[in-house]
Image (tube, rainbow, N blue to C red; front, side, top):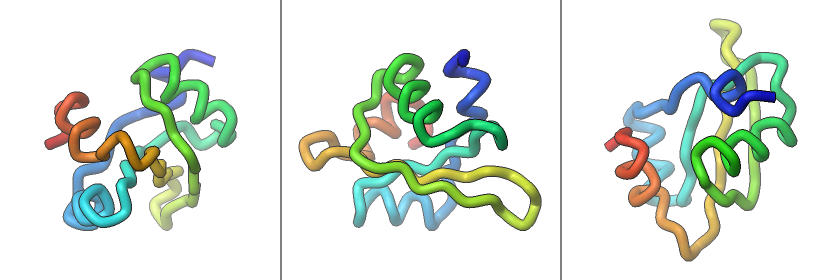
Length: 86
């Protein structure tokens, strides 16, 4: 699956920024049909991000949102800056 069809866009709300700082997590909106394996592969291939965990949920608006936990040696703030989120 094409990485850019899986990952739609990053989320940069207050809560997402707080999670970046405190829990080393990034937040994205993804394709509704994407599995966790598709998401991990898309982040690795498309954005060159190593991840340790993926948590998914569907919002009341019908969008699939994910929280991606990064390894301790890779700060989420640095990755967000590279992606242009911050």
